[in-house]
View 1 (cartoon, rainbow, N blue to C red):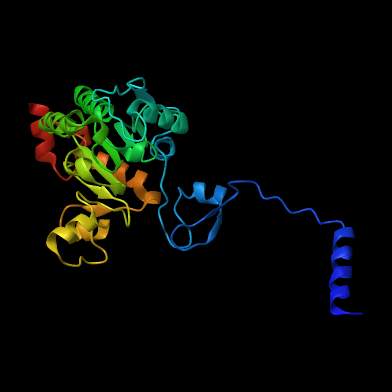
View 2 (view 1 turned 180 degrees about the horizontal axis):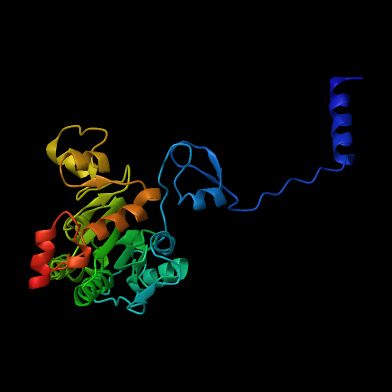
Amino acid sequence: MSLFDWFANRRKETALTPMQPEREIADGLWTKCEACGVMIYSKDLHSHQLVCPECGHHHRVSSSERIQQLIDPHTWRPLDENLVSCDPLQFKDRKPYSDRLREYQEKTGLKDAVQTGLGQLEGLPVALGVMDFAFMGGSMGSVVGEKITRLIERATWEHIPLVIVCASGGARMQEGMLSLMQMAKTAAALERHRSAGLLYIPILTHPTAGGVTASFAMLGDIIIAEPKATIAFAGRRVIEQTLREKLPDDFQTAEFVQKCGFVDVIVPRTQLKSTLARLIRLHQPVPSRMSSALLPKSFPLMAMAEESS
């Protein structure tokens, strides 16, 4: 038998042999870690708050899932859900801005790049804003700035602490000056919040950049960042081309920014809720007068003075 005949017979045998059914794997059942490449059972990854159990890499979290991670069940009350951006500049690139907004709204189920509301965090009342990078890169337009400003003012009015989870590429160029003015508007609202003696904690996640970094992301009383998060104003390549020098490998990471004094503490996501609760409890207003029943027995004179007054 020639070699040609042997190959021909093999081809016939293969064609006559029934093919084994391929094993189907449901979409989304496994997730590959972006950092170490390990395949992780998706349910285990979500139960670990989207932090890789092998290397500790923090995967990107949607705003809705972030709210579930931080807010106690059945206590979330959303605010200003129906605010929608208009198209004041009639901006057109490859497609009209209004069409682009509609596509992202259908894709994410959100009206814009931030969710705001009131809730409880380990039983403590809190005003929470969560930016969503999946909506146009978390860019800050008029709706994002307005919702965050209203949230700050609501927290000031109700005299409760404020937490904002930042994830943004910066100002939204499709809205021009209307986008840039949100930086000043949110900063002014935060100044009134600070003047009322209230706590504000921004959480910088990957990435936090541009106009968001230059405004409310860096105006906190205690600034928290997630590990390895990119925190920047201008991009790395822009700075290198301007300075004409090579920047360090860890430049603009949360760890580098902390060394420079712009971040107070880096907290892993799995410890974020407990850390926030501890900070809020530590910064709760102290009663101006203490009841004598609460005074320790080692201070009898203080107890007598309290009773006499």
